Image (cartoon, rainbow, N blue to C red):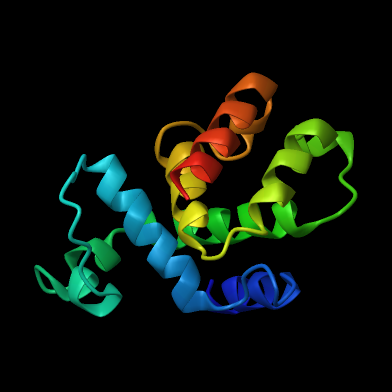
Length: 141
């Protein structure tokens, strides 16, 4: 599974996301949202996962989730999408606008919205929600 994850991350253009540690950082935000952790102080990646003797990483679901998350970013990095992905071109335009944000914090918000609250990629079927999310992220800047 590590090989599969590495290959997926290698296929994501460098300007988008290409490092496995970035995927795990996003996964940390995903888990924090899933567990309803609202503390605004975010621990370092290693400290977060080593808490409770790496119990979070011992879950059998971890690699499936991390691979799904890396596939999520791979799909979003594609310029032309086939209809099988379930992402409208209009929704993709809003996501690509976020790439011009000065930092990567929007990626954590998008990950939480699409992964922790809904099923991955199904969040793009409702254009109004994608527009609202994009507008909120840009406004928070």
